[in-house]
Length: 95
Image (cartoon, rainbow, N blue to C red; front, side, top):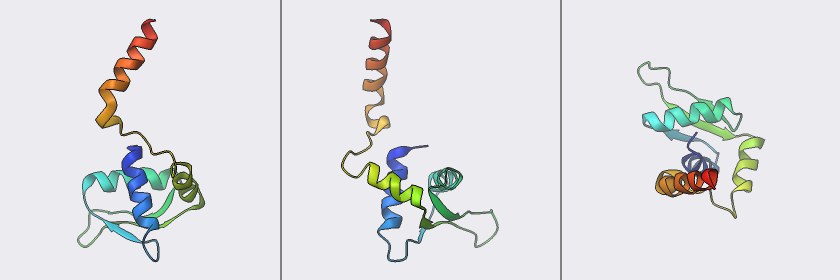
């Protein structure tokens, strides 16, 4: 699960008047499936049929808790800092 992206999706859905947000793209679909399986959202998932789509219908209590947990402390973007983290982890493991 791409936590920075998930956080952005949750925040975007939470910012909608009714909590509903329709999403496009493979990455969004994949992440919403994971979020739904983890109990963070109630979702409509694209089934591949014409006119089908993926959406976050509402955040669950767990999704709201996730957002609150990272409100003041942003999730580090591992893709942007991944090499640095990997080097620090490797250095720590060899010390």
